[in-house]
Image (cartoon, rainbow over the protein chains, first blue to last red):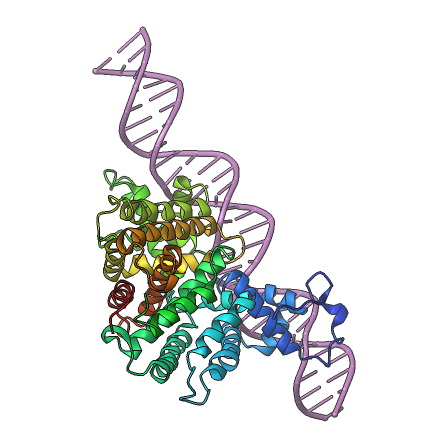
Length: 209
Length: 209
DNA sequence: AGTGACCGACCTACTACTCGGTAGGTCGCG
DNA sequence: CGCGACCTACCGAGTAGTAGGTCGGTCACT
């Protein structure tokens, strides 16, 4: 998501006005917005900052996205297409369904920017009248649904102590988020995927000691 | 934290300049800032908004707190004094040490504003150069330390499957945060304290089925 | 000739913050 | 008791800078 080339605001925007025609400028804007939302949040990010990083002016950004909210929604849609859509579309009943969640954690460990962006925007969506609110309500409902299906498939009725798959899935999703938050705050002292694996093991082997 | 009386910006500030002399105006500002940070986040809150809610002008706010960052730090200090300081100062080895965490969850269920404020500010502190960053790094370290001590006291060596108290404490804290996030997004479909209790039971009775 | 892709200039509203005041209370002193 | 010195608690006006967004244009390509 971060662009390693020199498309920063240091060069005058007009210089490269027609340069990257082959590359999709709209995607550049999307990438820049993603990065900045992860760095400063939605409310903390200005359209001009997005524009500068994408190598055009603020009005150029508004040419592609009619306003700031639309831009945020477009960024969020990217998440849907990448993560959620793919990760729960696995064939049901293939045994290790919970591997999908573990894989999501492992993927997150390699992409702190993605995790950070989601963590920041999810919490920010709790604020009044936040445009991402509906997105995250739906996302978590879907995550829980998918995780519950995975739990049912993998653990079946062998859940400890009268826990329902729905309860377990909420716990799993909660642990993912909470671990990632701690990991983002102190990357060196929290190993999120390992701890998530521990929780999973705890659920799978309820009679070990 | 919300003030039920009429101290809103609708009345002209000068009207009540000397009225509430007995009440501490500084505390009014603190309360207003707390509420607004929970509603709009730190970056989304303006000094004028804080001032209006506290019933004075923006310059009046700056009279008590030399700048916005100082105001945030003062609000955060309130959390420390209320929650953390009290909740882990229990006599060690009194048996049900983990009850403190459960009590914290139960308390949170009655104070969504407190939970929301902490969730929003914690995530926002992940953004670059956020003044609350150090606070939350320290807070989570302390939470984990306290929880680990509680785990050691209550579960002793009876942890399942080679899990260390430190790992369990990170999981517990993570579950708290994650559950609260889901609860804040959809209060009716997530019962945070109950789910936390389920996790706790899971840890205590590793051989039940 | 039209269309997509922008930019320059501009607008209004708001941001955190500063400066210089003033109203009223507290204090010591004669 | 009365008087000036000082202090706290603010407010009015103004600062430079930035916010999101509009309008009208220009340039290259089809």
